[in-house]
Length: 130
Image (cartoon, rainbow, N blue to C red):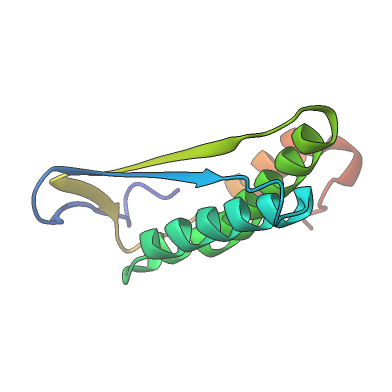
């Protein structure tokens, strides 16, 4: 980061807030297979995560997180239903909004320092600068 060319600006997002979502999903053993229950839970987790994707660019980064969360939920549910008799699942999600955020804009990177940082983190995949 080039601190001389980048500014940190306070950005009001609205008000502080918290949103909870709780959903109980019952496993109807007579009518459902174990994969049906895990797909219902996964679908709910994906829907809740998508509702959290916002308008602002920093909120759009959660699209990948939504997919990862749904995949991990499905794997966990499948694993648990193979080894346990599941009666139901409670899914609890929470989102917190902060009143103010600090945004670095414009974000100006020092290319030499960026390459140096990369090389320290990835010594086997070093970038050469001539």
